[in-house]
Image (cartoon, rainbow, N blue to C red; front, side, top):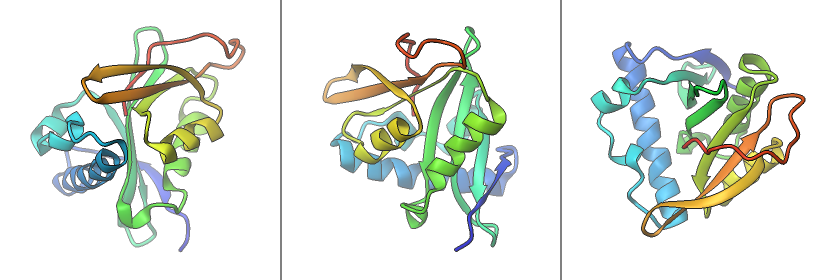
Length: 170
């Protein structure tokens, strides 16, 4: 299968928003199983609630036009990029979609900018991906009983890698 291409997503478009919502629910259901926690907020988010998020969205779309995954972020007051969510449709797992999205954000949209993200500490595929792409693991934290999150940051160019920043969410 040829590699998907990356494009901005307009959640004002009903079909796009519905596809993003469907992919997010499916991806977060898999993560909930991996981490043993089904209280992931985005898993219970309605379509209207998802669309109301003040986020920027890009998607990976297959040659046939099928959405394969998406990444959403916000710019923090300190100028860093906080990745809020990175989801891949289960039909596209293990095909490099998440890596493609992250590489696009890091290399094309925000080269040289600090980027932060968090994922369930037990989500081994996500943890490995962030580490493979040069993110440094920060402190784990527990936003809810029974949930341990791992924070990651990739400092902006020229900043020493040891500096800790507040995590985003994914």
